[in-house]
Length: 245
Image (cartoon, rainbow, N blue to C red; front, side, top):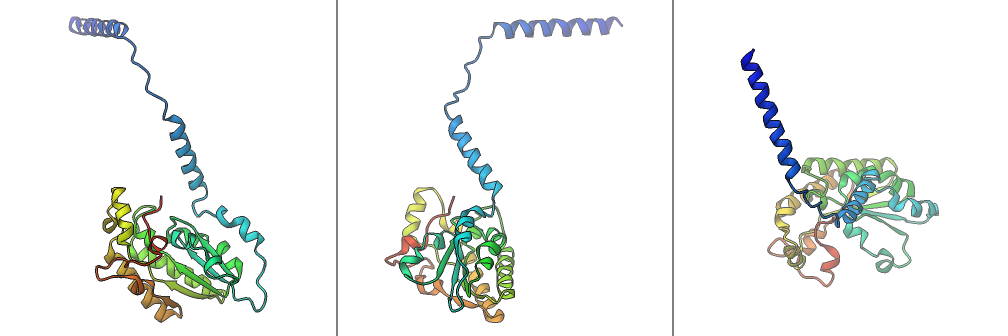
């Protein structure tokens, strides 16, 4: 009992000294909060993206205003990521009933989720799909080639079920010209988007098209150089660029 009483007294003395020490310690300066507005803005942006992960809202209004195609109209919808998104179809194909439904930074999983409102409901004759590079780049986390292939095949199945012809464009090679900009951003393009994975995915797309009644649009062979990168072309900067945020 005496030992317990001594232990309790010792604890009380230690706590008392600790309280006195804290009372004598000068108050620390509060952290600098000047970055809070920027952090809040970033959090709000992230919250908005998560609330509409497939980005249905991007083309919701445009889809509602698009009239039903006429009997003889050969409407084509272009589905893809930033390479499609930044392609001014109205300038390259003036007067053609071509509809751009590309969204920068998207992966095939997002395109598959929005495929119905942004492709099927628009009643096109043909859909041109260019996708996969952002999946390889890990824009939304790790994903296997098999998962990318499943997403592409699912889009083709949905299109075929609605009598829509499918054109699959090959994934483009990485551009050396753009790599110079990427290197300044401390991004390793070959690490972010390995050439070997691009080649493997393109081989699968080509094989899938041959056995499933799709058309294979081979951008890769037309643009690749002897190093496996995109050769210099007048519009290289518009065709391939860094990993989207």
